[in-house]
Length: 240
Ligand code: APR
Image (cartoon, rainbow, N blue to C red; front, side, top):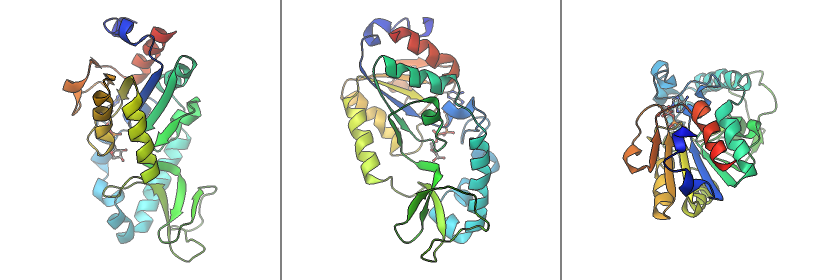
């Protein structure tokens, strides 16, 4: 509770909370982040693995990397940060706008999760409108759609736009909340990084939970330089 002492009276009765989360919230579940100290991109060239051009240049390499990430993610469990956000649903309406594709918020029990960048378990055809949860591993990669074209991971790559319906809902949630907690994201990638601006325009209170500085630290009402698994359970005790 000491972390939130300065802001406790202002937030304890808030009923509309939005979380904007990124790779950092899953770091304590053993899933590496992209740009932090253990950054995933450090030993993978992002532009080789997460763009539509890279996919068409070498679909097998991109599939191999996503299959490797999928194995890592399936072995991961939600940590105390994910679980704290799920528990907050007992005290307020909680909507999570996550950039993560690992499904750990849902696994922790959160019921309102918008996956801005898609999901590691989803697949879709690169040409026709076939979409599906990925139900089995594929014998050969890249897997083919019934239409004969190659299937791709159901994620948003650099340079691609977010699904319009998902982004609309995210903007509305950000514009209507009274408290926005930004946890585990460097706020480097757009358009997710403008969500705190929508919240601020609605006079929401902004709290950042991140061991490191972000692009918007100076805009926050409270900055907690600690990890989400340590910090978020304390946030729950403010509402409990
Ligand atoms: N708790 C909280 N924050 C943490 C923790 C932790 N245990 N560990 C690291 N962080 C912070 C880092 O300091 C960093 O600011 O999490 C942030 C992770 O930032 P990124 O690696 O840039 O991840 P993210 O912000 O989710 O990236 C956005 O970029 O690569 C694309 O599509 C990918 O969704 C991703 C997007």
